[in-house]
Image (cartoon, rainbow, N blue to C red; front, side, top):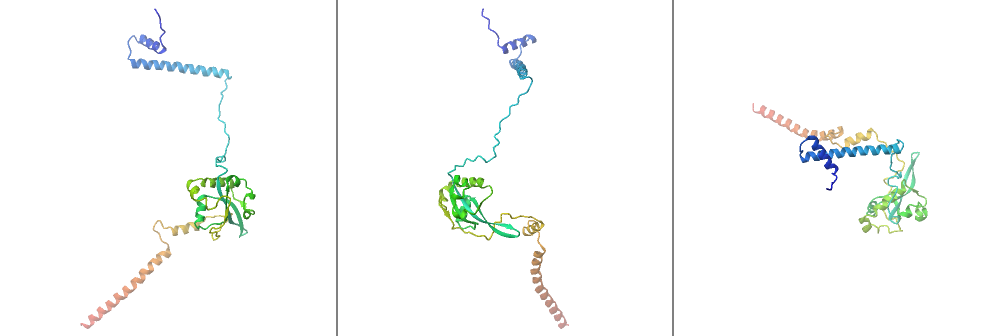
Length: 261
């Protein structure tokens, strides 16, 4: 007679049935079997961890992820042969209460150049187009002679990369590349210094600005004294003729009363 060893689950079921002396419901038997297996696995896991701790001398080993400490946005994926436009901007610097000229080299986005091409006022006197890789070199040799004495703007590299990405969109690629063809310089823009760009201007906000804003934007239905006086003046001028007419009518009535006596 061949004897087949019972599976752990079957053995546990038989042991539980023998202990209870009765036949259990199949669902209850399965739950008991699962609980028994869970206890065995938990005990086995504790035993394995104790053995590992002994092998490591009781020390806990911590695993940490390596960090490359890269600054966000520093690893640009923009192709170095991407098209980008860079302009020469006529700005100003305030020194000892006087404004002095300061020319700055700064990249121009596709939508900004489109507005300039349609006649918008701008502080750019010259616009030059080149490859992104050439612009990132910061070499005045690749620029026209008009750019020689100008200074590069703040965050020049990051702004060049950002502007180059604006030129990679479908609309600029299809419609705007002819404004300044690659390698050429254009000057036919609506240059103006009426709104001066002061690089080191201090913008100080005080209470006077708040009061002016409160009077100009009347969101609560309030009016200034001047506005109230202006609104009251027409009403007074309209009331004067009516009062004169009422007085004349009263005098006429008095005269009629005297004549009838």
